[in-house]
Image (cartoon, rainbow over all chains, first blue to last red; front, side, top):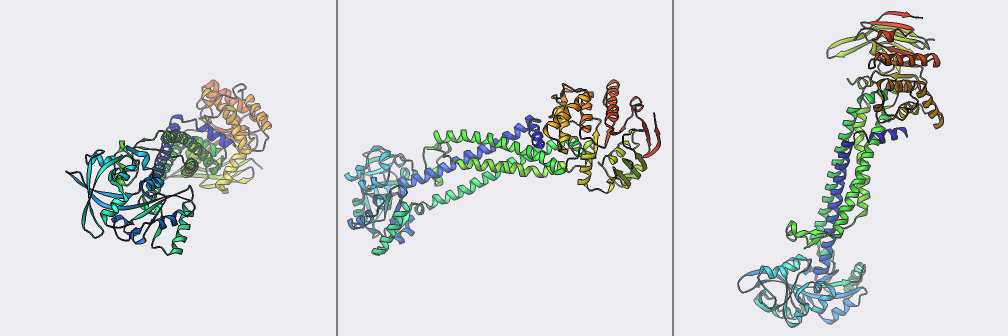
Amino acid sequence: MFSIRLALKNLFRQKRRNLITIFVIAFAFFGYLFVESIMNGMEEMSFDNIRAFETGDIQIANSEYWEEREELPLENLIHWNNELEETIRQNQGVTGVSPELKFSANLNNGIDEMGVIGVGAIPERYNEVFQTKDYFIEGSLSALDENKAVIGKRLAELMDLEINDYIILLVRTKEDTFNTIDVEIGGIIRTPNPMLNNSIVLLPLELVQQRLNVDNGITMISLKTAPNQEETVIHSLRNKIDEQNLPISVYSWRESAANVIALSTTKKSGIGSIMSVVLLIGMVGIINNVILSALERTSEIGMMKAMGMKEWEIVFVFMVEATGIGILGGLAGCLLGFLGVYWLVNNGFYLEFFGDWSQYGIPIVDRIYGVWNYPAFGYIFIMGVFVALLSSIIPAYWAAHKDPVEAIYHR
Amino acid sequence: MPLLELKKVKKIYQQGKIEVPALRGVDLTVEEGEFTTIFGPSGSGKTTLLNMIGCLDTPTEGEINLNGNKISDLSKKELAMTRRYNIGFIFQSYNLIPVLTAFENVEFAVRLIGNLSEKEMREKVLNLLKEVGLKGKENRRPGELSGGEKQRVAIARALVKKPKIILADEPTANLDSETAQDVIQIMIKMNEELGTTFIFSTHDPQVMEKARRFINLKDGMISSDKRGK
């Protein structure tokens, strides 16, 4: 107990140096907690945006189409009819069913041309699954009922288009012949999903089916499920499809968003690297602190040895002191981190300030918000204290191992 | 049986390829309760001899027996335990812990022994601080004490564990002559009242004359060993 008291008193000995070490550790902890909160927030927002605007909770497609879906082929389509819709809707937990026909097209405004993704949809059904209706700047999704198109704001800006302008979509039919879709713009959207803003043109499903010559063919069906029902619905749908021997497969939104999830895995290793750097900073700070303390207290260490203190007792004093610095640095870091994450969660910051992140595959625009990860506070604190304790052992042992005569007389 | 016995103790330091003898075969016997001074010119081996007796260093040759134990054969850990229970040290530059109060500096030594209750320990430390003239200054840190007062704390720290022997290397070297006399008087008082054996080195003739045994060390050997009144 006396050794602990001595170590704690020693904490106030070199106030400035200890404060600097505590500040360095605190700042490193703060950096970790802040970045971790942003990255988790980014992941959560990315996933939310994908589900709310791109995939829904579940997607149904022909398995061969699924393999080539990035190419947007018009082969291996699903034949959409009331019977199929009924089969899907009968599953408990399904709250929305939206058939889609995705295709590649060239958008022409009369002057310029640019590659886009066309999506044929039924407005009522589309609204059951996606949140797009809440993000109209002009017009509404009912424009599709009037054989009009809906495009993203960014795309409108790029192509210098406004509401009520006419566009021509140059498409290839199922037979690989060229055709055009001439439509008026009936709505402009600006969603938190950059893909929808930049490169999607929403069109009436029937019109698209007719121009692509695919009869009642659709590329995919997106489903919305009741909260936490995703797995149950997937399981029951798969059973039903197997029973009826239908040529389609069921996919979770995670399979659709594999690229973003891969990005999330990279994020985890990134966070691990940041954690390593943070702990390394703490380690260097503590080692430096213990070595300087030992050098300053050489004759004191000699006196302790003369009084009969064993080496491990002297090591213990230094270790408690280092751990004290680790605890104070950790607490200060967690406090700073709390304030930083609180600000991030409540205010967020403008992502555009740092450029267009959608080009890196991160489906977020506007503000990015942090999320609370309370275990991270405990984890980094415990790890920090543990590293402080461990990193003090070698320099403390070096100090305690000094020859008593040399230490007393500072030779 | 004498408290301390040195037989043909030699200490040779290696400086590169050169061997520097610090002690050239010292024979010495000290009985319990003696008040002994070791004097001699700088480089005569006084500090080396005190370090050997204090179990801080081991001889190159020869044998040292303290309280019946052959300390030249002890391991590092055993030497530490011998120092903890049997030897008190008083250093020229006090070597007090600056963050601890006078009370805590003395308490530190008792805690290492750890055989007293909280109340006993407190009483013992306070009594000893009173004995060395530091009543009322128990809660002062070394930075708030004069040189003489610091050395009194160091004396109390050395005495509190009731060691067999107290070794003091130039205990008055950093003090003015008046304070040096005060400090040596406290050492004499403690020697007489508690019967603790003191061996101290000094250059100061006024301090030296207070001893009852005078060992003159010259070139690593005892050149004279006289007893006073």
